[in-house]
Length: 332
Image (cartoon, rainbow, N blue to C red; front, top):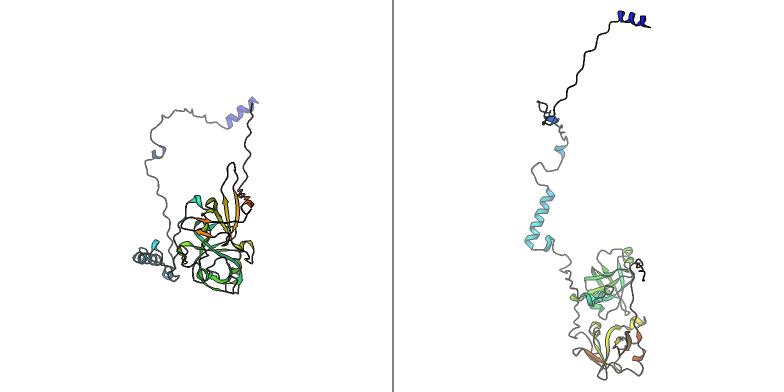
């Protein structure tokens, strides 16, 4: 092996390697990007494509305003000169405008009863009529011709909702002598759309009601407004026995309307009583001979035992969700 290596060394001469030395470069404060003396090359410019369809386009050239924006600006300027609110054009419903709603104190309203915060119930939609979007309304008011035959905004409350929404009633007329009215609302043009309104309740804002019930000029001697009777003090022989809490209409008791309206009287608590009792008193001349609205009371002469039929009024509780059980503390 030694002889072979010696022969190879003679045949193939090897060049000796040079010595390599390593030196530590001291740190520099100059960032790596600035070590080069020449500036970096600028980024290449993007080539702008030329629109070959520019001569056929209706788009405004550079510096010109868009025609639609010019139209909107001129319309806003015209609306501001006319003085319309929020830059909107005046209503086109023959001068009929929506009414500003003023809500009473929250302590005296029932969110499930619109009549407690300014709505007058007029009836409910019983069925569709014809193929042109008319509906039948079963009236609950004594002034149906004044409230359901003239165009204007009415409140429509769909089943399952709390508050009515204003909707324009275009026309209306009376149909028969059973309190049925045929009306048409704005946006209801077909029978299919009229069928969707079945079961809706119709209301009217008290601010736009033309019936003068406060002065009593439009009422007979034996007629009163329901809201006028509610809250009156009930007296028997000069002694206060309760307060009128509500009025139960005869139509609510029986569809035929037989009988008379009744007053729901909340009786005054006697000594030791905790529960609230209510009694129904028929609103007839023989039992309620005196109704003094200005004095704030009415006189009753009930037959013996009528007020003894009072029952405990149970308040309905609406459960919106289930609460987690309370943590039980270990008492020592």
